[in-house]
Image (tube, rainbow, N blue to C red; front, side):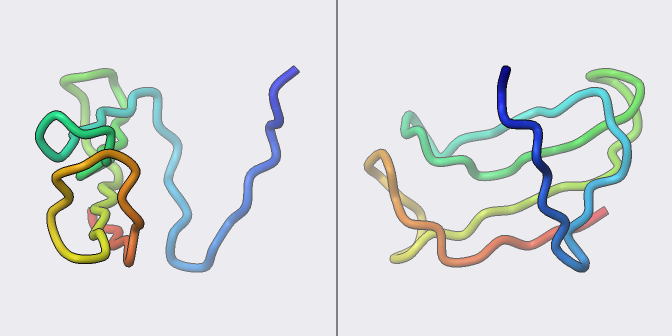
Amino acid sequence: MANTRQTNLPGFDIPSHDYVALTYHGSTNNINTATYKVGGASGTTVAVLTLVYVGGTPSANDALVSSITKTA
């Protein structure tokens, strides 16, 4: 069974959702945004996390995250 523990950080709680879409920086494995929606892929966006990396836009895999901003 997978670990289901969830940590809630003040201001970063994600509302109920049933869909998550990820975008990446180019062909790297570094996530640019995580968009959370309710109502499936074409549903209503309830939160967006935008990741910023050390040194700016990463061009190689496994870059270090320097900050995360939540909107929506």
